[in-house]
Image (cartoon, rainbow, N blue to C red; front, side):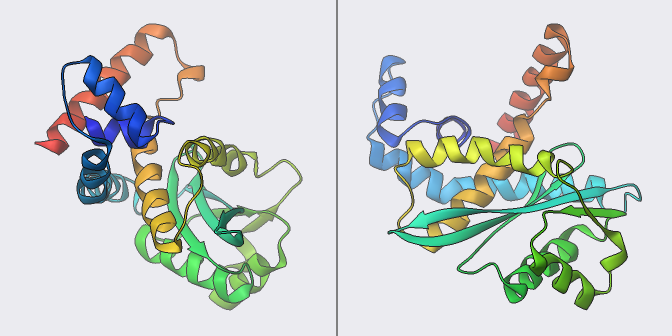
Amino acid sequence: MVVMMYVRFPLSLRNVEDLLSERGIDISHETVRMWWNRFGPLFAADVQRQRVSRMRGFRQWKWHLDEVYVKINGELHYLWRAVDQEGEILESYVTKTRDKKAALRFMRKALKRHGSPAEITTSGLTSYKAAMKELGNRDKQEVGRWANNRVENSHLPFRRRERAMLRFRQMKSLQKFASVHANVHNHFNSQRHLIDRQTYKTARSAALAEWQNLMA
């Protein structure tokens, strides 16, 4: 539960410590840090494994690719994201540049893990075009002014977490947290704006029950 609270919600380590204290659980913020560092990647890997096995080979799969800048100690880095047509984050990858070489590394990683989609929507960044041409799937690329809103909106929850954490200090820690956060977000994302209240409550309870099974 501690890992879920810290990763899922825009809370600091001390926020989690205070919330647990109100519930009669006395742990320090450093314990919260240690638990999320140790168990967060394990839980996220289980969530991702189930998702990949469920969706791999889905013929009508559509991907949306985009990159967003993140500052680490005042230096710009880029967080690449692959999102499917349902808004679930497939891959998060951090690089220092956003050239063809970086786009190739990102796309090869996503294709190796998830298989090839039917369509890939990207921004107008020329690195995507060059990378897809080398990979031999240039004919699958779609570029449009508002066509990539799906992945651009997926950056918002991460930006809220980034502010709560007062930014990142190492590229390695950014990669680790981005991957864990993406999978936890996927697990609890029930598209509540598209369903009624009762359906949402049922989906939320099912997600919590499944999360507790993962922790067990």
